[in-house]
Image 1 (cartoon, one colour):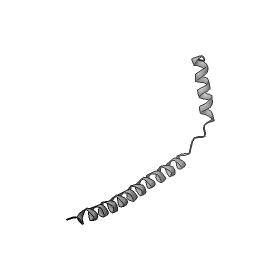
Image 2: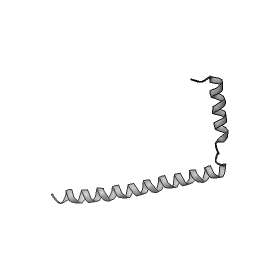
Image 3: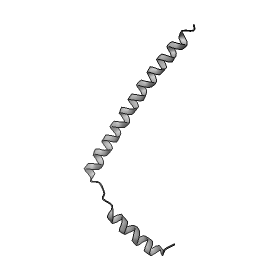
Image 4: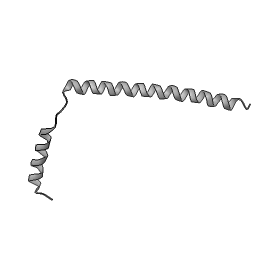
Length: 63
């Protein structure tokens, strides 16, 4: 294990190398993620409802 002081210096040096996104990039990416979450939720809701109707129809045939 290295000296804690050297470790912290190395961490700071590596953190300086990181290219941080701009505020605009962060907002655009967040918007895309939220849009995809809603799209995926609607997709799975519709598939779930279709499966429910099909299973209900099949189970209703036996009455």
